Length: 327
Length: 288
View: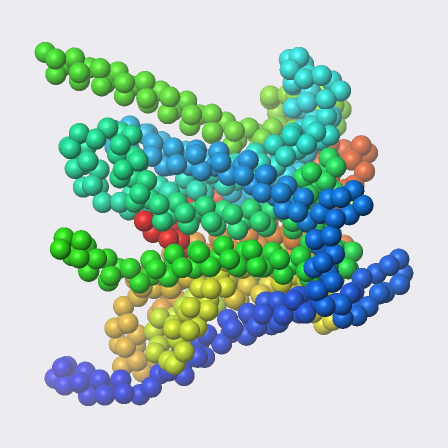
């Protein structure tokens, strides 16, 4: 009886449900079109126009071709190309935070997944190290400012112990301001990277570690010959997404330096530069910078895309490739 | 004999290694908590007490600072928190619902151009909001919506990362037989999604709601470009305002309290749900 009914209803399958697929994805694409795609075109369009406020006078919009881009790469009176300087600032501060971020994250991921070490209290450690990732970057930065300011507690503590001079100002030295920004970036992201890398290591077939150890490989050999090569896709993925995040570095230096990139614009980032033009309503220059950021993140994003798609198609392929290896 | 001594040597080595590892972990825990600990301590000290410098133990002015910060004339933090809460909650609901809906549309139905749609969403995943901010702000100004919640909430309907997470989740937990069975029982497609599919996605929705809530609550760049009316400002804008105010005239106890209030809601959620949040971190990314 039951079977019969089912078969009867099975004929419903010939009814096409395709239109529902379209209906369900429409809201997403409508929102994307209105709030991202059209603005994206507008942004690119703006980059070809002279359009800013000179005092109370509105200049433009006048079509100027690639002039905004030329201006962007023209040295100022002091001979510095400002965008190059800001890109360099961004890269230096990202790098200073990312190196410890990845070294520590890799170490912790190995510690936590090691059966031999058998680290206790992993739940607690993970909870604590991931916590800064959720903190509002603007608030974290403001906290660093108050703690390290001339009248703040850290300054007082260091002076009291005689480690620094009372006249020392954390905010007037390039190295300390950049150091603070890199430290915050490190603290906010190393926990996240640790957790992702850990998942990567746990995804590796345990038998590989066992057989390597049985074959007499020591811990270093296991790490460099087994763990690292197999972890590579995830590691590269983390690295590139971190780079994309690094290019967007804004909240922390903006709040810490009140938007001026002190001292002497050495901590002004690319997005702070963009933000400056946006708030001053110089839409031509802001457009040109946006396009450049778009190209750079687009190129890096392309790599991430390739990795995700590859992983997506992998499950069926992996079998075939393994068989092929034997042959 | 030799085997035994080797064994003992190994044990000593392991113990030393363990001590080093725990020391590193303790140091990192200290780094992660130290600044926030100082924040809480300093939020409990009066302006005069703060002027005396570093202090390791809390004082008695926590409530005073809380009342002062809450009633501050220039920085209306309760209003800011309300604004942020409305925006973040609405974003979290919209983002997860429409991401799930979109993922389901691609997961459960066959239609022309499906592959292209999926590829497109994957391709736009990594493009940051900053690069279209100019056009976005211009458009919102033109529509007279720069002091409105709408441009801070509705864009959440298109969230490629959340979509990808939902899509992966559906592949592991959502057999299409269930959908077919619902059809047999005469359930409409929307009803099937809302009453059968959504409940199955609960864990994924919970995790993604938390993440979208947090990123919306912490979002600074776009809101700062749009909102200029005092009563519309969100918490991050107020915190940044604190930085540009004449700093020397401020009651420092109040400043620490503002920072504490800014991160408190997210911290409370995290303390309660840290386990599932940490589990959610790894999903939606490349697997080894």
